[in-house]
Image 1 (cartoon, rainbow, N blue to C red):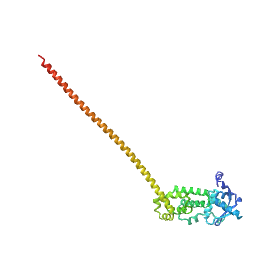
Image 2 (cartoon, one colour):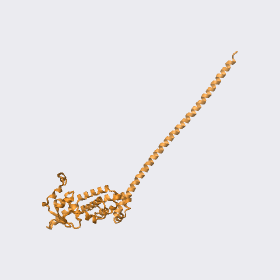
Image 3 (spheres, one colour):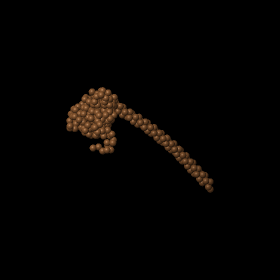
Image 4 (cartoon, rainbow, N blue to C red):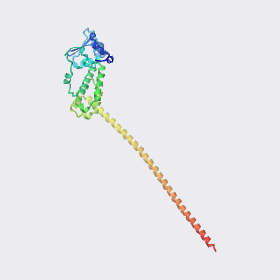
Length: 300
C-alpha cells in the first residue's frame, strides 16, 4: 500500500479508488479498463482526439485498441495513474481472466531473451514505442530512463546474444527521426563494435537496418578521427617540446664552449705571465750575480 506522502507525488493515483466517477473505457482483447478522461486525455492527445470525435458522433466513450499487446496496454494504464505496481490497476478491469496477467506470453512470443534485465530493456523499448504511438510523453521519458539505465550497467559480453531482439525493436517500432532510444543504442554498439560484429545474429539484424549501419560506421570513424587528432596533437606537442629541448641543449653547449674558450684564454694568459715572471727572475738573478762579481773584482 502506498503512503500518503507517496500518493501526493502522484496526483492521478487517487482516481484508482473512485471507480464511481470513471467516464471512459479502454478495451484491448477481452479486457476493459474503466478509466477517467481527466487522467487519460490530459496525458495523451490520441485519446483526447478519439473522445472528441466520439462526442461529436454521440457514441459511447469507448476506445478499442485492437493491435496492441494486452500487457503493454495494462502497463500504459498503470503509467497514466502513477501505479508503481501494475496489479493496482486491476481494480479498474473487467472481462478477461480473473488471474493476474502474466508476462510469459510476451516472453514466449518475443525474440529470445535470457536475462530478466534484458527482457525489461525490451519491454521498455516497446513501452517507449507505445508512448510515441499515443503521444504519451511521460511514458516515453520514463521508458527511456529505464532503458538508459540498462545500457549504462550492461555487460556487453554477457548480453551480446540479446542485442538483436532489442535493436530490432528500437529501430523497427519508432520513426527514423525519433532519436530517443537510437542515441543510446548506436554509441553502445559503436563502442563495442569488435565484439558486436562477431555475433552473426546481430550482423543479420544490421543487414536489415542500413541506417543503423551508417550511424555505427559514422560513430566509429568519428571515434578514430578523434583519436587520430589527439595523437597528432600529442605528437606536435612532443615535437614542440623536443625543439625547445634541442634549443636548450644548444644554448648549454654554446655556454660550455664559451666557458671552455675563456678557460683556454685564461690558461694562455697565465702561461704568458708565468714566462714573464721566469724571464724577470732570470734577469734579476743575472743582475745580482754581475753586481756581486763587479763588487768582488773591486776588492783589494
